[in-house]
Image (cartoon, rainbow, N blue to C red; front, side, top):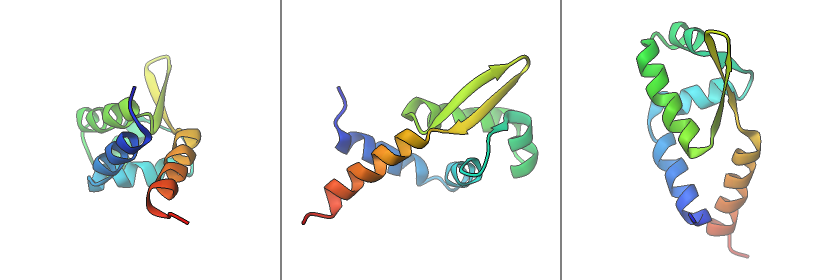
Length: 93
């Protein structure tokens, strides 16, 4: 079992990559599918898939297949948990 400290570290490590950070910011407004992200960020579909796989493994992003398309959404519950864990780690009262 991973501790909340490990989850916070992993999230910071992943979001330290500018592309992944920008993808998460983009997904905070709406869901998007791979080709849309590829065009929006001018990256190959393989590159988008690589980044989204990492974000999905960490639980920050959810993937949903719909026919030939894979839709990505931000996992709001995970974001809230991470923010709460960060607060507990860094803001001792």
